[in-house]
Amino acid sequence: MAAGEYDIITEQGASFLLYLKYQDSDETGITLDAYTSSMQVRRSIEDTDLLLHITGSTMGITSGDVHTGSVTGGGSTGEFVAGSGVAGSGQIKLGSSAAGATGTTGGILVTIDADTMANVPRGKHFYDLEIRSGNSVDKIIRGRFEVIPEVTR
Image (cartoon, rainbow, N blue to C red; front, side, top):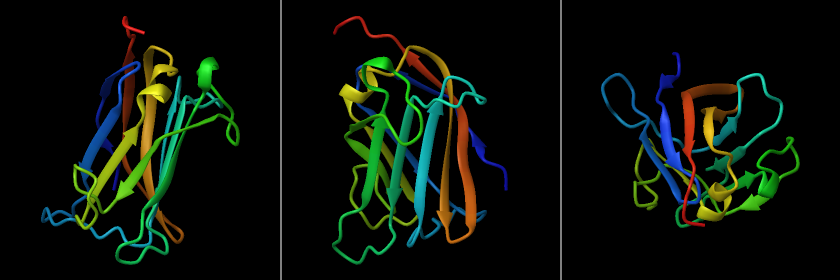
């Protein structure tokens, strides 16, 4: 199945939050136990440098455990190569509600802190989000990632 298309418009220097429901054709949420997730933002599809890399995982999580994940941005330069960058706050939470509570079948919550978003260059970029379980990879969503410049800094 092809990834859904959704263009994101967000603001430089503001906290970022995106909530999705991953469902089957009957609109039943898909269980995301034992999955990892990754979302990347780049200036162009061909660009080797990243602007953002957000991850999340439900691998090895049992009831009451904390989801694991991370946010990496480019810091003051805005861009970075894979394996480097500046750690930020946030993650992709799988099996989450829009408020971040666990236990919502099919819920995917992406969060990025305001400090990391302040360093994302303004302009129209590209992103996609995928989930993985074993050797199976599903592209969930992709599109433009437009960052509106901030005035108040």
